[in-house]
Image 1 (cartoon, rainbow, N blue to C red):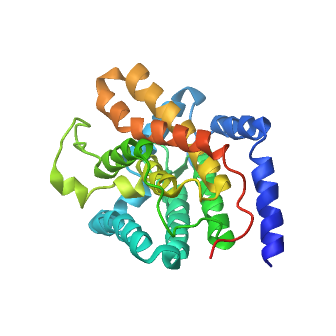
Image 2 (cartoon, rainbow, N blue to C red):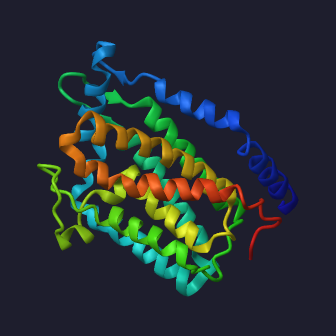
Image 3 (tube, rainbow, N blue to C red):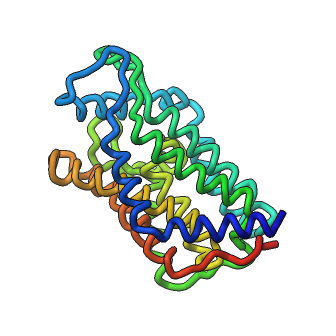
Length: 269
C-alpha cells in the first residue's frame, strides 16, 4: 500500500510542478455561473455579488461559533498530541472545503433563482481533493513545528483573517472582540485558506508539498480577484481589500516555498 501511495505522491508532485497545470486552472475562472432564470452576460458581476451577499452557508449563522472553535482546537491538538490528530485535522479541512464549495458559492436570489458560481465550486473542490489526498497519504509530519522567525508574520495575517473585523452591514472596519468567537470567517474560503496554510507553514518543510502548492495557488487566484475588486473596481470598499491581503500574501508564500520541497518519501508515522 505504501509503495502505491509513494508512487502516486511522486506523480502528483511532478504534475503540479508543470506550468501548464496552472494555466488550465486559471482558465476555470472564465466558466460562467449557472442560474435557473438565466442572465445577461453583462450581469456576471452582479450574479457573483448576489450569491456572496446571501450564500446558503450563512443559514448556519447560529453555529458559526463552532466553526471558529474547531481550528483553534485542532491546532492545540496538533501541538500537544502531534501526528495522532493529523488525520482529524486533514479530514475536517477536506469536509469544510467541500461544504464551502457547495454552499458558499450557491444561493437563491429572487432575480436569478438558484444560482451556482461554477468556477468557485471547482476551485474549492480541487483544494478539498488536495486535502483529501493528504488525509489518505499522511505525508505531513506534525511531530514538531518549525518555528522560525519568517513564519510569525504569516501567523499574524492568518489571525487577522480568522478574526475578520468587518461590520457585516457596512463592510467597514470593526475591531469587535466578539468576532473572534462568532462570525462567518471560518465558513468563508477566502478567510479559511490563509488559516489552514499558516498551519501547514508552521510545520514546513515536513508537509505535503502538493497540498501546500495546490491550496496556495487557488488562494492566489481568489486573492488577486478580490484585491482587484475591492481596491480598483470598488475602492469605496477598500477595507474588504485589506481583509483579503492575508489570503494573497500567505497563499503566495505557501505556493512559492512548496517548490523548494520534494515529495516526502514515505508516510510519516
